[in-house]
Image (cartoon, one colour):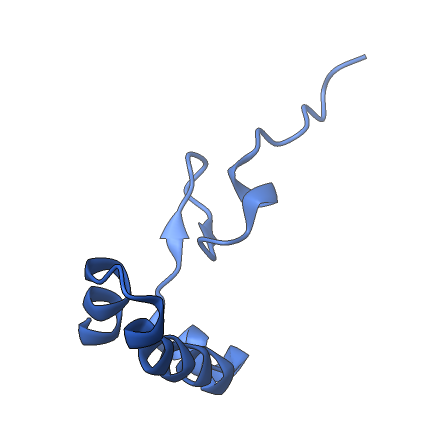
Length: 67
């Protein structure tokens, strides 16, 4: 939170540089395994558990009975 506040509250580009570097280093350390531990699956409209970033899971499933 502190990184985000410092990046968004200051107009000084030079002053924001250390916070931007820390923010990039933090995002580089987040792996898929860590991400899955931090984020929970969500339910879509069809009561299926999906990851929030799985955009295909939010789309309407194909109708198996259409001709």
